[in-house]
Length: 374
Image (cartoon, rainbow, N blue to C red; front, side):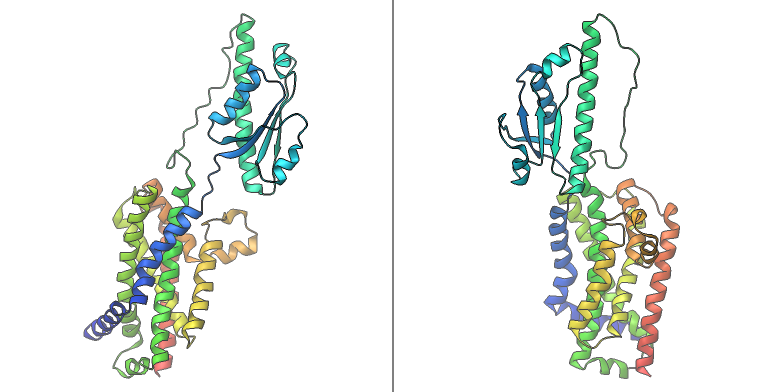
């Protein structure tokens, strides 16, 4: 233990004396959380809507009000009868154009069935699909209201119908930031954990001080543990810091047990730090370590973890690769604890996969470093 403590103390002093290392471990995660937290947003609101109302009647104004009052649409233009509507979409004046033809009110009054048209910019398919869903819901609600008014005018009552009362758990406002911020925590901590240990060991190689450590009476485990523990402690502090920022800035509260969150994060960070150490045994320059660490941590955690893209929609061969990405398992646990208030009980399989990953990367790093010592 004295040997391990000596290596860990030496590593911690070196980190505290290096402003760049502290910035990488503490400042960089905070910066990335702010940047991606505000930049990544899947909520579609205040869509620019051009309205061509050729009827100018009370029913047509009611339809327009239904779109605007939903908060999903803002009137961006009111083109005249002869104006080219597609030009509005081409020039990005609006994302959608609502056309209410002449005779709309009279068709409703005569029970002939009135028509409206929605022209939609489909260049952004994700936004277009969401906007189309909003429009369908608004029109469906307007249809129910019109039908009720028609029945009332006929002196009848409409008692039969479906009373639809949706209830959304865990994220009632359906804010995408509540889904994205936990994913950002996993992404950021994987990146910083890998780069911190990879660059620290390779930096000693470049300076020649790594040879002094190898000459010390240390086995591979003591060297690996001594190199990992200081960064593990600092990474845990950084995780607590960015979770506090997520609560203060984005309103993302931790509903589950902090102890469960600590256990899962500890295991995840051990894997990230171990992967960084493994990289450091393979390369001899900080530039190459940075590139490999970036490619090996950021891209898989961003693309193959379920952070942004759903794994169930990926091809079979790509799904198989995602099983090698530790962020895939950590994000499931993290979102369960933070959003659902769940314990670790439903996630023992994810914890098991993380434990296997930690064992594999730390074992390989130890073997590689032991061979170099021999």
